[in-house]
Image (cartoon, rainbow, N blue to C red):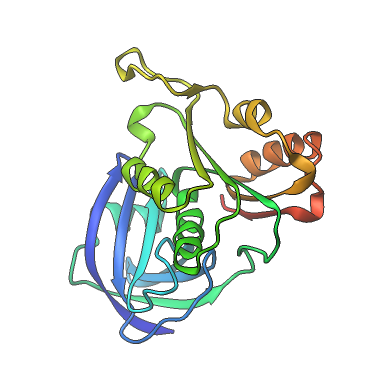
Length: 232
């Protein structure tokens, strides 16, 4: 375990808060991994697993994207009480959700705070000059639930073979949405054309992961080439 400090925080969406943590010393990890985030709550220590959103080449910073879970002890504390300058404890890194070394096309699918490990992987691809064909499908309910759109569009400029596809399942009239509409699985089914030569990286709820697995196997993505990070 290492003592760390929250040095910056910003709200990405009504339900997602980004934390930037100073780990206190070089913190080495592989893009896609997660940390155990420990904070004091009601006289006890609460620990939860959160994926790292920052790139590995910046090992003096750990960035987390934490979604508010209704009645969640840890996320309620993070969203309502944790402030810049507070001390926190992290442990890790952990996990084997990372980009495999291959020449296959890359399909990324996420929703909500599932953005974090995908963002880390994409930034690591920029740093390492990895220019494989990549499509990133990000699902949200309405426009208010989308975030980091400018950052993703910038990555499209830095990775010539990268395409970001945000999709709304229930766009509101005031959203004036002109992008993809429907469940993210339906969008994937419509847009993925070369499943046999692809590998997939999924991050989201168990229900979303299972639905994506079904669609990807329909598209002939080999099951051994589908990697995922499930969270409740």
